[in-house]
Length: 212
Image 1: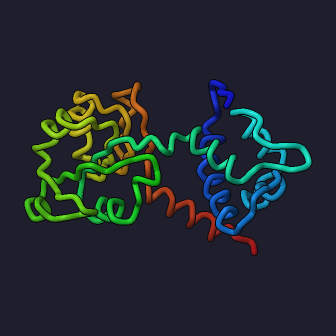
Image 2: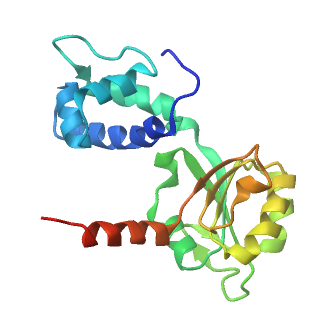
């Protein structure tokens, strides 16, 4: 697999969708797919599909297309899906509990190994086969376990102090639901921000402007 630097964020954002569609094709018993069919599912163009894959190497064969299983494996390698990064989740409220219970971290390159909260009513309860620990245990836990990623499901007001603590513990990657801009203070981290309200407003815009 060839690797190129400076892959655009738009290409990276499309890779999980390719991966999802390829898995659907595999379940349908389809062994090969061409760029036109992938483009149809992606609502894109065949040229865009080929350009995206060319960022990483030559995967298809002229006249045959792409092997569904081989291309799925290539995208798994590109995304690092099989790496199983150890992760902790902080905030066992509604969002945090839903994420822990309904997302299979092991199938998305993460292994959830700890859940933390500061609410005495939540500490000691079980979520996703893990016992919720006191947030005061984070430092000891991270020092005893090789934690690479933190999922932040805490209010924005609590995120700043928590982020500083986690950063000082060596955690440099975050799935951030807090609406706090971690990159402002820690430019060397990797962060994926999730703004549910932004997504709802985009849906609102699309409904308002739907001409169908």
